[in-house]
Amino acid sequence: MKFLFTAGGSHSTVFSMAPLATAARNAGHEILLTVDEPTLATAEAIGIPAAPTPHPGQAAARLDALLELARDWTPDVVVGGLSYVPGLLAAHLDVPYVRHYWDIVPLRDEPALPPLLERMGLTGPPEHALFIDVCPPCLRPSPTPGARPMRWVPRNRQLRLEPWMYTRPKGRPRVLITAGTRAFRLRNTGASMRRLVDELTLTGAEVLVAAPPGAAEEFGTELGDVRVGWLPLDVVAPTCDLMVHHGGASTAMTGASAGVPQLITPENDYAKAIARAFTGFGGARTVVPQERPDEDPGEVIAASCREILGDPRYAERARALTKEIAALPTPYDVVEQLETMAGG
Image (cartoon, rainbow, N blue to C red; front, side, top):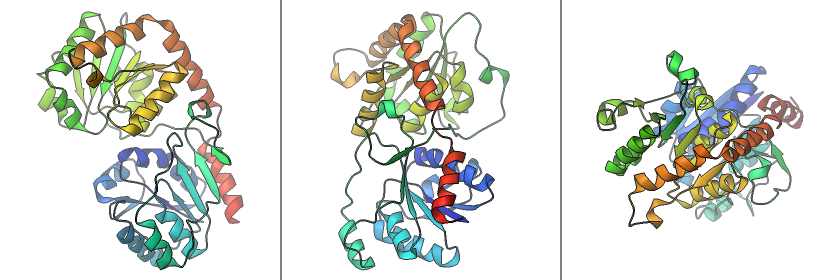
């Protein structure tokens, strides 16, 4: 069988879909992932066959690209996420459409959808044959009818490992700070990032700053004696006592899979929804420095870090979340269901 996966406009969606795509390929099926050009290198780096499509915001052009691809490589199953475009392709091909999504915020309507429906001769958005939800049930704001839960399996770019990456430091906690794939988040923090690093170092913590390649040269001397640069987050996370990040789904779930307490500083509504869910469960705290303009953001975040590190309840709840994730069906379980659904 042929499985066509279509990822949205972020690296996180590529990491999210990769485990299911890999499971399908390991089961003997052909796979192909379509992504927009800026995230193509990410798919290539983690070994997923990928082809470029226009940015998800260009819905009509994206549909044209998928229709053209399908003429040469016709899938038996189409797996999509946030966009309705993959469903339109599946309806055109008369093959099952599978929605693969992190169900923690409602799906947004697409302004370009009505003309696309008219073009494809449809009266409404195509129904999915299966809805795969990689959000742990305990984090959902409400039950999702018909959702097929699937275990989140961390997937990241890799590099040559060194012992410090997969071993815990002796006698002191390890705190990892990351802005995901966005180096500008680190640049924008300026002196506040240095203040945060200094405050954590004074507590005796070892500080790691995960950032895109080249960040070590840009930030290394500014942040003092800390490790700065690209890290294989799935390898390093289990060695950490705390993760500080912006609220990206991939980062948050990698920490959750490793049982690590988290401090989340969300900057948009999507990240705030993730922060609320993790904080509500008890394994994280949410800090929005912008709500405390008279205080230094670095000091505000550092104070919350000290509270998390000093209160074992955060680690206990983080481990409880890890157990729930581990009990969910694996991507291989879901592939078996897809095979049955598609008649493979």
